[in-house]
Structures are given as C-alpha cells and as structure tokens.
Image (cartoon, rainbow, N blue to C red; front, side, top):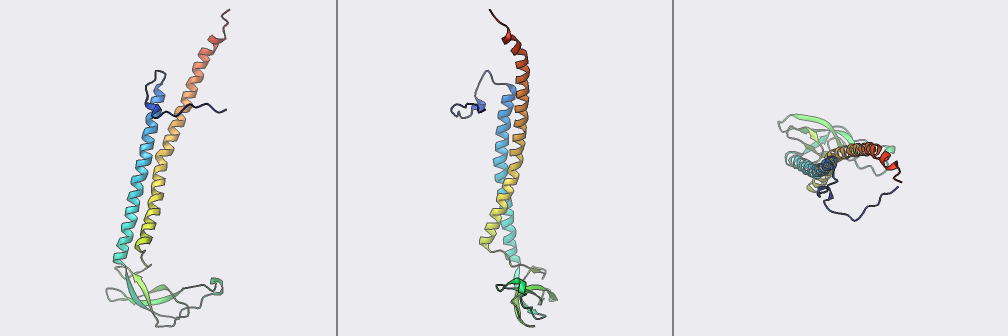
Length: 193
C-alpha cells in the first residue's frame, strides 16, 4: 500500500504544528545532525586524506633519487608464461649508497641484459631500493581517489547512525499509535442510535 504524499514542503520538520509530538521534534533534530555530520565529516575527511596523500607523494618525489646501478648477474630471458609483451624481468643489481657503502638488491631490468650493464634504480635517503615516485598527475589522481574513498567511508557512519535512530523512532511511534488505537477503538464501536 502506497501512502499519498502531497506537494513537497520545504523545512516541514521545523514548522509549528499542534499535532507534532516530542518524537517528531526529536526526529527532525536527528535528521539535521545526521546530514550535517554526513556532509561535513565526509568533506573534511576526504580533503584531509587527499592532502595527506598528495604531500606524502610530493615528499617522495623530493627525497627519492635515481641512481646508476650495474647488473651483478645476467638478466633472465622472459619465460614462456609471461607472454611476448614482457617488458622487464627481475635481476640482481649493485649500487653505491649515499654513505659510500655498496648495496645489492633485485630490480626490474630489460630481458637478456648482461653482467655489468648499467641500469637506473631509485633509492631513498638511506640508499634503500624504492619504486619510482609517482608523478604530479598520478599523485593528484591517487590523492583524489583516496580522499574520495575516505570521505565516503567517514560519511557512511553518521548516515547509517541517523537511519538507525530514525528507524527506532519510527517503530516507537507506531507502537504508541497502536496503544492509542487500543484505547480509542472501543469508543468508536459503540452505537449512538
């Protein structure tokens, strides 16, 4: 059964009405607070998360440096399972850290490179291997995605909480109407004539 709804009236929850109950007023405030927290909390969380990710990636671009390394062993041929379009393979490389020590590790290199071939690897301030840092456009995209997801997840909490409280208030209101009907229904059943 679908209830008839009249024309939409703005701010109807806050209009004066002698039939409005305490539960109706409480529900109007629950809706207001839930929407303010949903929109405001989601927006703030999204912006803060996006800013944090973007500044972290910018710091990586500043601190991580390309370093020339040399292959320690011949790079393997791409396997049959990797397909003909395999661009890079893993191989052992050696490079000099900022403190002058020699380091070794695994890096992606062209297939079939021989020992001693120079390759470019990225290292952090301590000389550890890292991936190539994200460019500015990629950093903005990542920050936007992380910020959007964080905003959605944070906004979902007050939204769901508001829906739960409203559902409880609705059940309570229906129970009160049932109780009142139990008191009034016998009066309507009496015959006047």
